[in-house]
Length: 77
Image 1 (cartoon, rainbow, N blue to C red):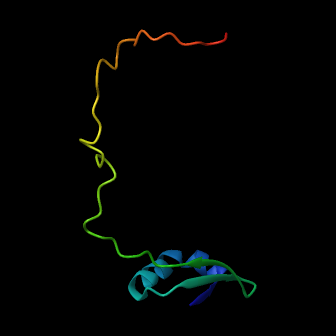
Image 2: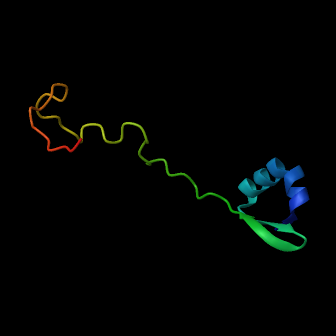
């Protein structure tokens, strides 16, 4: 479906709702020339891992991470 930029601006939310139902790409035009394309997102998978906490249990800490290590660094000041 092709939509002029002015119409897209005025009916953006309505056009996105239609896109969600029809899964049809929308090409936005200015002066009859395509300038942008709105495409439907692929369906979400239910088994997708969560963003937060996905590495839980994969890292282990050895030793004291709060106290200085005692190693001397060669640093130029």
